[in-house]
Length: 257
Image (cartoon, rainbow, N blue to C red; front, side):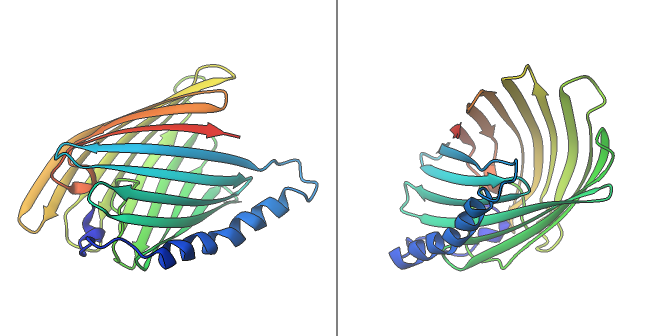
């Protein structure tokens, strides 16, 4: 887990906490569903993603995520548990708004164990060429990080759709600006629309920084995704995932409906 997750996490979350996370999410999902009946030509879409994580130290974990997507709003709930007995339920909400030439994405997350976090990411520029700027903060409570990048961090980079038809490329860098972990991650993300019904993406990254005050790590990661109609699959290999010592293999499958 990353540097925001250094607190002890050996005890499973209570059933009451897990129930609270789900209850906190229900109003968001209900609100999103109600909007779908307002005659807008937008359509409520759901995304179900179960994932399996296998670590080189012999531990493994499962995660199931359900997201509701309606235009510029996204709400989601998730449930994570690993072979060491740790269990965490979570919920989140994202809102995207276009302000002139700035596309602003605001997000918030809650997880059992008292975790809260949020971020703001801006895409600045034209549809074909743009800059990326982001900033995130958490309350530093225990949290298993499933985006595998530092959360209390700054993001900077750029993207383009001008290289070739159907291809979008992003190059961006994320670094811890709060906890003096010297953690840095650089991503090259490529998305390609093969045809009307199929698309793929490739995320290549390199990380370096402190796993703990005395252990410096560095490594590479690759994640490949293929989507066809309403199903997709993702495979990933991540050295020192979340700046831990073990390497990690991940597999995700998903359904859009």
